[in-house]
Image (tube, rainbow, N blue to C red; front, side, top):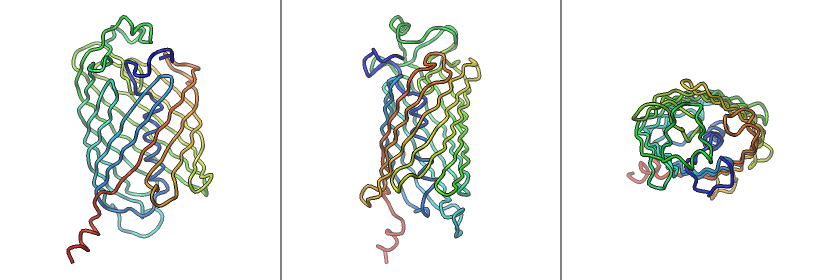
Length: 294
């Protein structure tokens, strides 16, 4: 989607934004200190350029240690369970979310929830007659967005390694999604045509270096394949992540992603820009509660 359209265009969450949301949580886990059990709330806000996009990602979850052992491989192990809400002006996904990290080099995120595309803000679901139908800005002028409902289920295993100051990670996300009706539609989180019942596979690779205690920078590779439409998108970017070291800001982070699409039905060779800011808050500490009762 080209940039001569208003900011709140008809479908707003890009591939790179989804990756940026994930990388901040993955990196946080990859270099995490010992797991601190408790009830947590996380909030992030992201925006992208080409396509223009906005996403609000909210998470409420309880965290507990998974393996009680000393050592770098075990101190960050954890089990998180809770709710996640991902909102854009075009759709919303609210899910039950579980994350397990049985060892520092591996984690698994599983989600299942309600998928709602809505036209209350003038955006919503663009139905397509075929996966080859035009869906860019000119085509959307003659389309009427509609409401649509369905489900979204995903599983995302991540492999992580850290050598000296270098962090290497690879995440493969498998999404099974469905909307009411038949035919095809523009799925806004990948910005690719999907069948109303479809499966897509996303692979993200990150090579990052800890430049300073508060800055990580490196390269990312993002690949998407949609099963029922056989469309592919591929993207490479440079990424920087800032995590302040001051105690009052240590739970905050910001990320910037700049790159280009190597392959994409709409954006091939286009420039991509994404940014994200967020924070994690522990809102209940079980250890403090036990001390208060004594």
